Length: 301
Image (cartoon, rainbow, N blue to C red):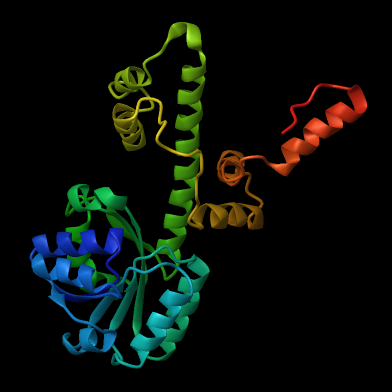
């Protein structure tokens, strides 16, 4: 197939290469010309604008967007609507909020365009291992672009699927990322407890390698933890600062809206917030209160 792809970040660049390796033709553009040049070296058709990208495609066109959620995705879709023809398809593979995807599907449909929301997981390892892709949209539109999704997936018969109507793909990816937060937090806390048991002098990398075979916590995340510990046994090169990209927040808000308890996922998100403050006010207030009512010792700056 021939597809236009907008956005050549960590995901978009590798997805382009995987599609090229699978025999597809990919027309790419992004703001960073060096990334366009890198994609061209691997076989892509590089252009310097969205207008040029659309002109390289034949109707019915397909344009896959791999951009950050929010205004840039919205403005790109609006621009594409002025360039594409009715019957053309826009696929959003970024981490958009599912409510935005529902809204975009509605106004695009009213204007005669097709829309698929493709929740895409795999990170920087997707090029080698394939991507897990959760798609929302109309079955006949999905069928038209399934050859692309198959190429991106870990295999032609696994790791992808049409999971529901427009919005469902990004909804499934949102919940996926919420679960990811909880699993990452559990691994982090477990290794921390091992490390604090000083008298046993655990080699965290060794224990992780043991767990990788036959244990009930075997997972790709465990493999990545072991890899990180092999490179830096006490992770001393890293700051204890953890960002979040939004999906965990949306998952927790969705749980609240649905009256669904999500204790682990919520606490994992809140723990990320705490990691960004070296001296949280709430902890200093706790110290002050203990001193005030009990005369307990405090540590001063």
